[in-house]
Image (cartoon, rainbow, N blue to C red; front, side):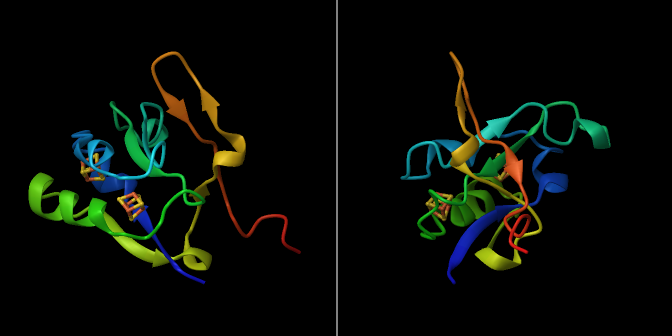
Length: 109
Ligand code: SF4
Ligand code: SF4
């Protein structure tokens, strides 16, 4: 097991700053989905991490804490994630990349 970045949608969706998406060194790992959090009343969506691409460097945590000052990202053991986005289900749009949110423990029984 290893640590990956996990974004708190309730914090991120309230800001929609998108700063972390510009600093992750891994391509298509932190993405932004304008639909995330809409069911909870947030207007602009949230960043999320495609965990199977995340290398655990924690650069995004530093950016969110110290540059954005939103403290929305923590490093979490991959098997402790409440839900996760995997690039298995990624779709490449004209202007965005979207990975489907799935529960990594689903289907393991
Ligand atoms: S820097 Fe933090 S608040 Fe900004 S988009 Fe990334 S996770 Fe969300
Ligand atoms: S921990 Fe590193 S690789 Fe993973 S999402 Fe954050 S910046 Fe990207």
